Length: 617
Ligand code: F6R
Image (cartoon, rainbow, N blue to C red; front, side, top):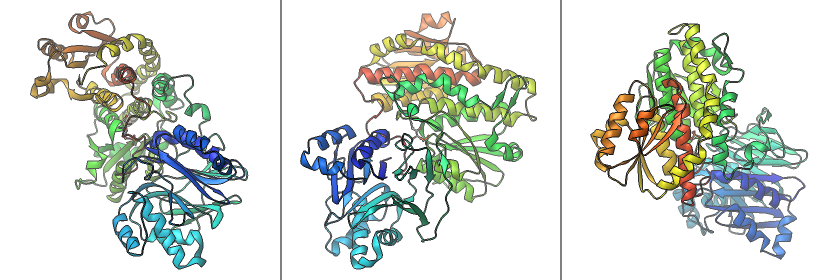
């Protein structure tokens, strides 16, 4: 949520900041702004996209030149929490004399109290944001004791703050530094040659340098052209490890596709191979998951697995439940991370809690992780973003290796998560519930999935035609059973989040218990009707929908002629056993949602109100 970028060096800071903001726009796109140090402190901010901000800069004539002279500055792209998306609520926020600029990602929970006190001291507020309170607080502390300097003023202000923040602050009084601080909202420092970058994730940094430092919660840094000093908020100096980014620029560009989402859907065959690479030994029937090896015995002995996640990752978790219970016979519960932490759950030292998160930064998932750790459970992570907070705070874990996912709607991260869960379930089953020969067969089948996904992608034109027929529908129902039930949920989520069509996912058999009342000639129903043990029952459900004049779009296995007679449209996927089916059945649903959304003129990569990484509760 909210993208943060900072630069200090010798190059045109404004240009670097705007470019960085473009790369971060998937984190929030209500408004954007930059502040640069060019002798004074110049600010440009407004409602709307980064490209609109760029245009505004070009139209600003004389001041444009002086802005481009700056070699240090900060930039922000906003996902609104407090205050509507507007020019006045856009970041950076300024102190009353315009001498300090601040950008903030997160929520200052006690901002009302801080604001009230500052107003009583004569401060005026020009926005509705919680963030503005902080810049005035810093200003107030610094004005009272001018000798302490910016860093100490920020530190003192943070003692008063409750809530979450990723912050960058600059001041024209100390123009050769950027002060940054983190609690609950990620920040990365990129180390270049005589230049430094700051960002809320590595996307805007990777084209400049691969050397990065991930700040931890409770840390501050002062970044200058000569280096950086990292301390805790309590002023204790920290030695930090420099990490190497493991992706390049091509991974965060569209590569000829119209949208990131489409590119990411098409990347899935490669991604699934990447998930397996180095981990699967087909001929030996072996899986090697380095990140959990040291804890394997403990994992296998656990009395229960609890999976916590949000959104699409939660859907992957549901499939994980089916996989782990079927393969390893360990009981599994799946919780929304946001519910888990607030319902006083029973967690024991014998439990394993698996948190799943693409971004590794989701606030609710992180809070669930911390709660589980506090209660003594073994906490394991399944994350995509290397070095993310969740990846660092879990005791052990498995990276999904899906590469950066930029489209706000998650696609390749989902199939990568499911693949990891499949490998995990097989690993847990080894020596307990499955023989090596059985594992070998399951691995062989998984190994064939990328090629099957390729085959499904080849039907894209046909799926596009179906999308055109249904682009004006107002509601959709998605039904599936067994492993396809979470896929139905995921298909419905994809459609609603990018096309704004109301869609519900249900277990097919539950239709009779309520949703059937909705069926009429205007209700398209998507059935995932692959040949598994509930196939015959799902066919009966299709009949029930047809007899109420509902339109049926079926996802079925190749060669299934019967379904061709029942459904209005059929999208065929290759035959597969039930546990690998979600990796195939979800692909047409991703494409269908994508095409319906583009027919409706929606911005699929940046759906309204959403942000890629939900770092607030
Ligand atoms: C949907 C989507 C969201 C995320 C959810 C969790 O397409 O992307 O529902 O899945 O916000 O995010 P992560 O996986 O980053 O924790």
